[in-house]
Length: 286
Image 1 (spheres, helix red, strand yellow):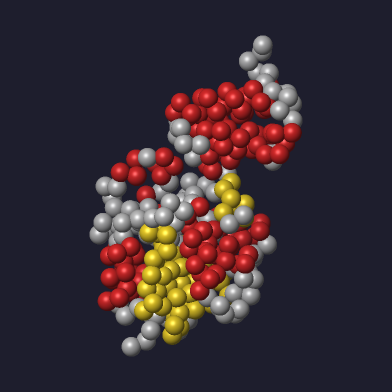
Image 2: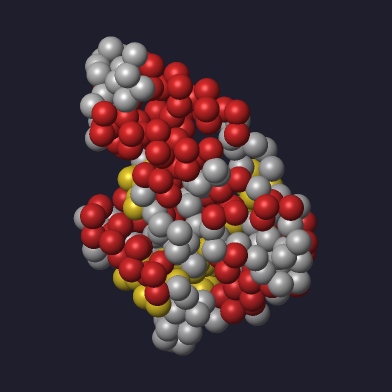
């Protein structure tokens, strides 16, 4: 048959087979997402109309994306979209692709902060994923989100606008530099860089295509975590929560740092793989 004439089922089978040989983690899902992107459809359409014939242009576009996926490019970069907390977020190479495990941080924030009028600061917002997820659940929270990278700030603002959360205040800031010193928050959250410069994960998977500035920190990956923990004391209300995502092996050391800095009620929540991922603590004025 003509190599440009494919049914949905045939295209998915070929795409899955080709991807699986090079990127074996989720080949069928990858193939589905790429074809959905090309066709502008949802997954139900793929299942309902497996015999639907792709046009030659659609087939060529799809297999071009498959070829880029085989080279390792993240699906999110190929489609320009990643879902987080059921929110469709635009993504690009200027910042990290939101990970499912970061939803653990969102869940902890929603569980522990009970004020309906809470003030919230997200440091290093990237796509805006955490701030926008929190706003979707707590529309009366006053949320500020900052990022050092101007392109990331523009992306987060784009996502806020497209989702109808334009009330989220998104600023360019080097951590706390743009935050007034007299401003206090009931909650500060962050998923900062926490990989060491020699971490093996930097040469694996999607991470290879993400900016190292959003991944790597000094002091074996702990520098930004410690900086945020120290500086947050000047911006938290009495009893306010600090919640930090971190590497699976950093929980113990981070809990020790937080204790020495005077935080209380310190604990670490596990991610979906039962690894230590989000450490939470309350600020108590001395």
